[in-house]
Amino acid sequence: MTEFQQPLSLGYHTDLAVRFHEGGSCEVLELADLGPVVRVATPSNPTFWWGNFLLMPRPPRVGELPAWLAAFRQAHPQARHVTFGLDTTDGEGGAQQEFVDAGFSLHRDTVLTTSQTVPPRTLNTDLNFRPLDATQDADWQAALGLRMAVNAADPEPHEAAGYQTFAARKLDAARAAQHRGRGAVFGAFGPTGQMYSGLGVFSADGAHRAGGVTRYQNVETHPETRSLGLAGTLVHRAGEWARTHLNAQTLVIVADPAYHAQRLYERAGFRPTEIQTAWERPPQEERSATESGSNPDSGRQAEP
View 1: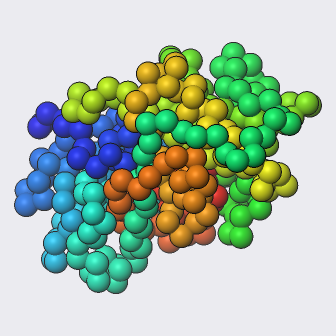
View 2: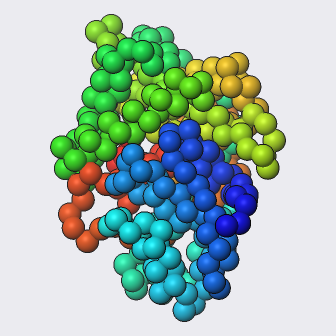
């Protein structure tokens, strides 16, 4: 087995670091004609598309699709989805028509970075912005309630019971990572303990990156409290916390360029740095406990 090397892509470098903090694993598979492929697995959450995928070392070439499908099935034999990340920075998708004809969709998200966030023009002071308490179940139940509300308001929501199981597993993993000092989940709390906005911020340092790399995760706001400056305030507060508690020098966030979240992040001081590219094919059955067809950390509201 080839020694694991950190990805070239800053987006996937930080993705893999967070997956590791959440209990996932990364290993390099030397596959004939395909090169060194990174297998990412999250046994505690098998329906997590982007916790169970293969990272391609380069864009796929014409005629390689059968080999890539066989490699994925060997690496993730129980998975109903098929997901490939591309360890590139320019958005090149490779043999696009071949993958599209096989039912895949190509996603290109923007990787944004900053050394320090700036506060929004209107800093929200009505709610309590703080890290969740890793020892208090009530905080994490509030976070789960927020995720369920966001899912229910989505134009194409996931089936509620299955999604609740999936979201609870994700929060359990984040809670464990926070307990180990790897980062924190933040919330905007009302006076009765309801959580109206949330995000995660976790260390993503690695041997082949300079220290202080930190990744935002799962920025979301309750559908009834949007446009109140909650997400912008939370992004700034969490960034300041990360600079103090995680020695953050490079803050990383990923956004869907077609969604308004990227503009919010740019107002907070982030600037586009790379393009993160992915191929994905959902299960043929109706969506349930799996993620949506998108990276959950890209700013789309369909997943945490």
